[in-house]
Amino acid sequence: MAQGTRELLSIGVLLVIVVVGIVLYQPLQIVTDWALILPFVTALFGCWLIALAGIKTSNPQKYEIGAYATLSWGILLLATGGAWFLYSYGWYYSIIVIVMAVAILAISTALKRK
Image (cartoon, rainbow, N blue to C red; front, side, top):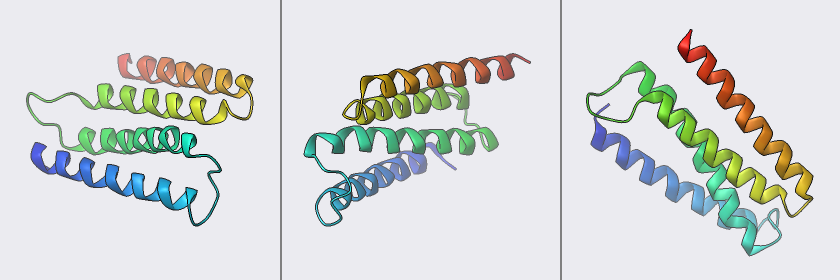
């Protein structure tokens, strides 16, 4: 998959994630506060970056960011969005999410070096 195709795909996925966040807020009332849409979108885009890292592993391109860096950014965005979203329920949930993200990054780094 060419670099331009991946960029266009990522923009499309981001727009779909924003629409899903708005739909979960307004008609379904699952997300109860407008301020929680941004962390929800951030966490879902982190999930997309993790999936994109898997795509990049199978077909790496020259002169582009590697799959491991994309995976790391995906985990970072997922943890940031998840911690921000869960902060409204209790700060200790945010700490748990951040510690879990650091643990996942440590495991992925150890497996990469193996």
